[in-house]
Image (cartoon, rainbow, N blue to C red; front, top):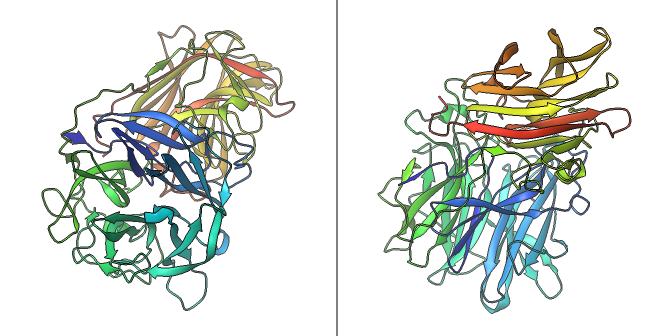
Length: 548
């Protein structure tokens, strides 16, 4: 059996495609770089983090964008006629006054690992853009047309426009084609596919919270009209009818379903195997209960589907409630390399599983300057939206221990380095070494930022020598705390327990839609060149324990 979620931690808005015997799934990355992670599988059970589509932070400039903006909802497809991968993505620039200013782009590549073409600007009509490769070389772009006018249903309708590969631009203006398959409202995430001569539209409805779902419609003509699936929604964590069409709120905690191990299930994309099987990827979440806070963010799950005789997709085994355990494919099993728990930085290159807010990690992280270490050059404060030196990986379990060994000699109080639990620039806890003018030497202490309120926990201040120190973050469900050591054997606790649940979409006021990271960090707020050396980064997580 396949146990969900298959991509744990911050991995929302999945889109899946197949080329021959290989399956590729892309997910959103928002303000984190490298952008658009791509996972690879041969059997739909075992997956590896394979590559990233966006790796040039000059070409995709996310600096100064607020949290939860950036790269939204990529659509990854493979066009067999052209032997070409297509990636369509949006750069969300602003959500001020609910205008949702987004620019949508299209890029192509012969190889999933690139090189990718120069971006083609499509339009800014709305978000969650995707592409249909139709017969005769015709292509269509579908997206949510975001509605801002008073008296009109919000957030809007699904619109479509033809795309000219020759001219590399859309033809005319987008036209509305679909207003949803239920009355849950908040329709988004459209994907157009073709099956047995019919056009199928798959969407998310109900908002990205607890009323989320996957719906479908179909038509004989690409422009519609589209017939609603009579069984909508086809996948959800909140079965039953709901009438929220005129409520644009996206979280809707009242629809939390205590009977479902997966919550917020929606935003789907399906693929057919070489054997004729059908599997659907969708986002999900695992909240702390009763707080209903999702520290791990929105994750990716997989469901086995079946085509009915009358041409609709249904969950294998019946019903529409997303399953935690799913029957695996008949494809031969193929094990793939996993992200290591322990990284000694001896490989001479930075692991693909490391991310940084808004800029590429190589801008400040160097594994060649001192072999066997990663050298992190300090830049701006961790609250900055610009150039921040945080080398992080996704938190995949709320039961984890994160450890590092650091060499760092601060010269002034604006120098600091250490270990961080980070949701966004307004919410983090940072165990750092810095220069204390009060003590006249180096010291350890904790900085806590909670919804923009800074707490410098002076009661945690401990004088330390300028020798290597071990730093550890313990996450035990709702409790998180720090420890430190000189020898890596005997650890001393530093500071209080922190509430893990607060690192979540539901609690953080300045961002949403992402997830929590753990990582290494350094700041030099004067000259942006002082550095810290880290000997290793260890991430031990218990993936079997349930969140709640």
